[in-house]
Image 1: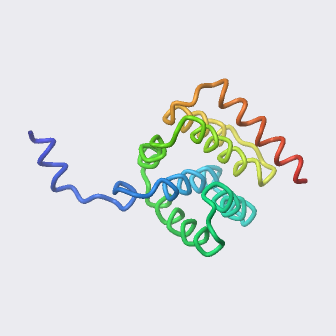
Image 2: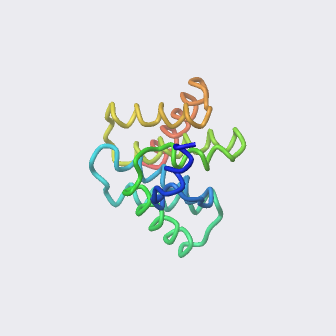
Image 3: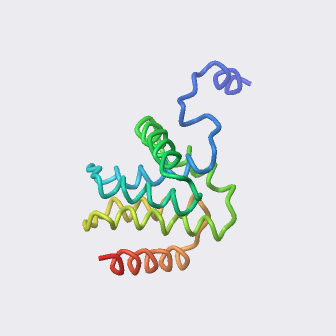
Length: 148
């Protein structure tokens, strides 16, 4: 009972409120880019490209979703706030989210243990198993190396 009352009177951050799945996915991608402490243009460009492809947005819509996702990711206290919305996607689409996260973290040419830990965490929250996660990474690596 006390928990219910506390939740009722505790102000919610924007990241904790309901949001469209594409904004939640965008925020997960921004978090992936931020996890190493450096957010560079190549990462934001990759996120915009992924939003354009995945949700068939025009450039203006992708930019607007990216801006909203950046704000939410900066205010967030954890990935769960976004994965709870992204879990509504079909498994195949959740695997594509994991692949997209790999595309973002690989886009800057740097790899870190923090980034890999982030992907493992998000994949687990999205109920994407380790084999599917590894396959998503391979697909992302192939796309990144094919684009170079």
